[in-house]
Amino acid sequence: MKLLSTAATFLLCVAPFSTARSLDFFNSQTPIQAENEAVKGDNPLEYCNDPSSYLLQIDHVDLTPNPPLPGKTLTIQATGTLNEKIEEGAYVNLEVKYGLITLVRQTADLCEQIVNVDLECPLEKGEMTLTKQVELPRQIPPVR
Image (cartoon, rainbow, N blue to C red; front, side, top):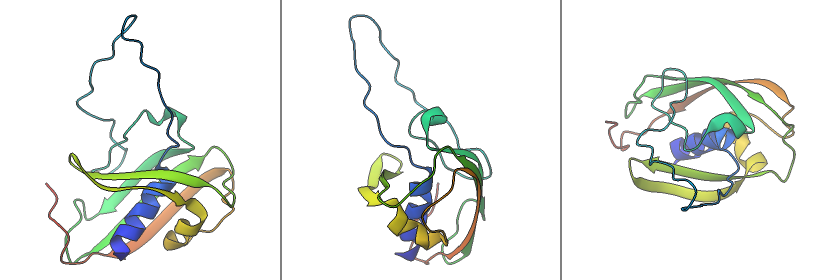
């Protein structure tokens, strides 16, 4: 569960606030995208949406080992830039998928969650670096 908390917290830091896009079937159509944009670095992560409007612009995320291995220590190294100051009361929408299966879908208080990665609110605007080690349980499913 600690892995899920840490992974979810990390994803909370990089997750965007969701916006709705209007559909106009008569004037234009957008093809279904089969592949999402990859997060830069040595990792299997992908953005769910166009990251250009995200509050956190991710420079890179490195996972060691990649892919993560059951029963081993996972080291997460990430850098990025916060475009705005994050204060108490900030919430994020989080969705974690394993292929097409949704594992987690929730709204979370960001300031309550970031303590899991040794950060605390307020988070100042500007460059950020995160390094975290997590002991992975032996029971996690294998990565394809």
